Image 1 (cartoon, rainbow, N blue to C red):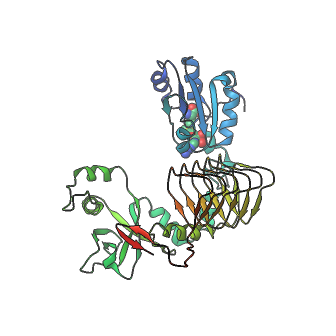
Image 2: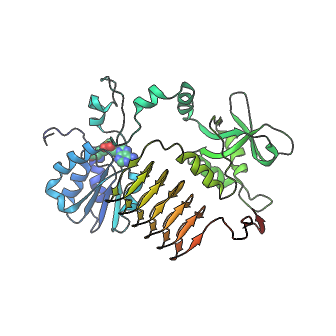
Image 3: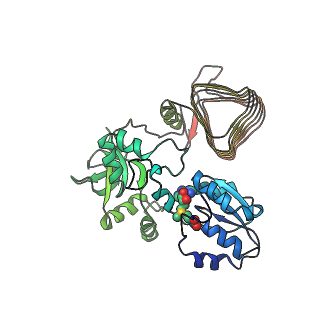
Length: 387
Ligand SMILES: C[S@@+](CC[C@H](N)C(=O)[O-])C[C@H]1O[C@@H](n2cnc3c(N)ncnc32)[C@H](O)[C@@H]1O
């Protein structure tokens, strides 16, 4: 595409330039580079600042790399969803952020991108490396599920029927699934629909939370907020059809991880797998994560972003490693969930564990649910030991 065919005229161009013109130093993040109109304007009008130019669309990035090449020494190009961009560049001196959110005109106008009404294609992926397209959703999802997705325009909460409602937070609903009330562990039956704690609210809920009084137990209760919310807005209960995993104790997270990992039908490797890594079955390796040589992977594994797995480490079934973790040399991890920013030093052995955020496990450390006297492992919760 040539410079004479700029596919997108940026909105509020003058206002954007005005906003950034007096900055004296640092980086501005353009979260949605698109066809580079705003970025070009900022670079031209303020020689003091540098840009981090992000978009999730390769076509937009490639076009803008060419369009902005004169300013290449003042730009870091970044590919991905803008939700990750600040974290990725948190070590830079960031002095401004611009997000011109939406679809660009080229995405709409190019028929093969499948956004517009003019072509035959249905696709709608902004990041063309993503697996799921609108074509698959519209043509392969069950009608029932599509109806639910469309209804997601409402405020809603996921619910499921439980056998002992007196132990759960229960919603009372009318015949149209509108929630009338929520009661924690109701003594008098009001239904069997239990809260699954997955909500779609917007900022209105915070206004309501700001105005609820402290409860007799001296807390701000979500039940009070919801009961006020339903007086003002329609709030739906969506009963899920899927298997219901009650995540009650911390170790139930391992059951739910197993549930999802068992459904990992194929690998998706988005970053670096060095030579001599063995992968048996499937792995998702998110961006900026690395599997170093001689790592051995068995069964389905999920590794989130910015994590590294060092040589000779053995990752076994049902393991999830979250963001920014380092699993050093010759470590064995099985059936565990390792949360953000955690290090596991070499020669350690982590089995059947949930390792919290920011934990630094020293070398030659063992955690497992096996006792030499064959007794059950007990964990203290609220002063009581649970097996
Ligand atoms: C309206 S255009 C931006 C136009 C740009 N300001 C310009 O001057 O040309 C929106 C861009 O945001 C990108 N985009 C939308 N949602 C995004 C997301 N969640 N993460 C990263 N980029 C996104 C689209 O790919 C598109 O290129």
